[in-house]
Amino acid sequence: MTTEDLESVTGFVRYSKQVDWFKRELRVSVARRSDGSPVITWETFNAIQKKRAGVTSEPIEEQRPLLRPEKLRAVK
Image (cartoon, rainbow, N blue to C red):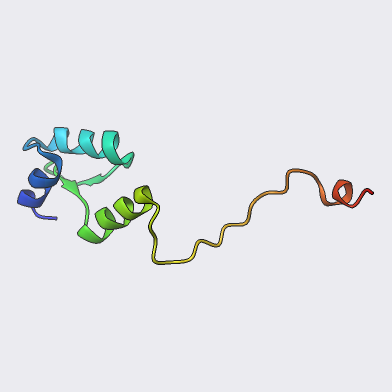
């Protein structure tokens, strides 16, 4: 994202306020350049927005943990 993009998205000009906005609104810690400006790509930003909205283009294959051990589940 360019400086203008960051200002447009966050509504802030100061780098520290932009970083605070990302932490508060998106719950992410963005990397910073040596001058303190945040570094984030449009691809990353859009992926975070899609995740928050519950929309993903990739199937989620997440194994859920067992609530009970396997040997207790087989008891009849």
